[in-house]
Amino acid sequence: MQTESKASYKNVQEEVTKILAKVLDIDLNTKQITLESDLTKDLRGDSLQIVEAVMAMEDKFDVEISDSEAAKMKTVGDVVKYIDGAVSKKTDNK
Image 1 (cartoon, rainbow, N blue to C red):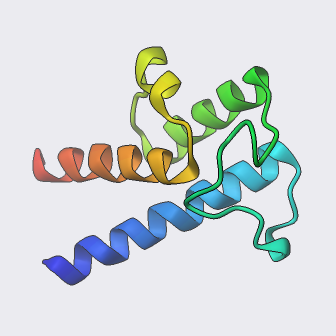
Image 2: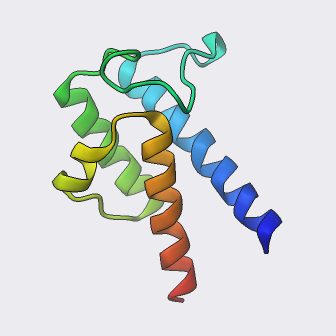
């Protein structure tokens, strides 16, 4: 089960990175998006782009991210951790 969890986390990280790259117009090959990247400071996302990214992630992972939860997410790692947890809860409830 541990390996499955790590694989899931890695998949979430890859998909979140792809979404952020698309929304923020960042070339994936630059490796600019890391778990430590700050969404606004490092990646220069404005509030509209962040909302667009959150909506894309909600669609991709079939989860809901409240405005208050989204506001707490400062880094890419914060986003990945939240979504991985939400996806895991959904899977556990099935």
